[in-house]
Image 1 (cartoon, rainbow, N blue to C red):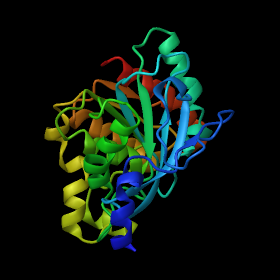
Image 2 (cartoon, one colour):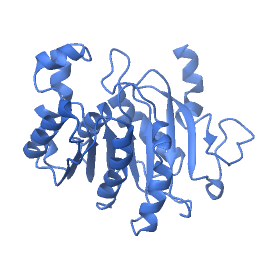
Image 3 (cartoon, helix red, strand yellow):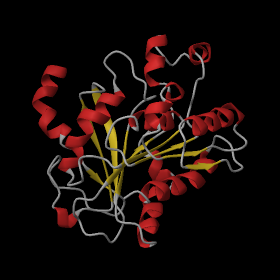
Length: 268
């Protein structure tokens, strides 16, 4: 299937199977590139990821009323085994439009499907973000180097890992999933081995994180993550923290995500 996929790769990697958001008319030809003058605020589709060795969902959210031109990009990383489209359920299109109307420079939010963001064998979500995503952004006439990244849960930890790479102007993590020891990480059964955990655990890389402005949020009623998030904030010298009432649930994420987007928008 992969050999056959090589022939399809150009179309899929470029954003094939593009699906306009609600109310927009679908393209007459699957995989045909939409004229920049006809781009709807929300575009969803599935792309073939070499990094993840499979097709993945992608969701592109632009603020309404903004001319269709290349604009900066904030990557949005979902939690756990969720999906990229959860950001539509949380109302990110409306959040983003309001942030821009309130005076922020225009930017797009792009969510992709990353599994648990750790990966295994042929599944490498970080490779997808670093190698596949720039081409997808270019196809959709967006800036190919994201200026920021926002994530929650496991996606929050993945956002912090992305923040270790040069080029990011801001990172926002909401209720990140953290493991202070290998014993704790091993009990979660998320990692292949200790070496993998050591490579991706944000608490082990706070010196690298300190080079990028970081915002951290965690619900005060989320004891599993609250203390660890506070430790991370102190060690990584986070420039923004919020530990308001709330748990590890949709209600808290809906409140925190607009704050996280406003935070990263402040670094445009």
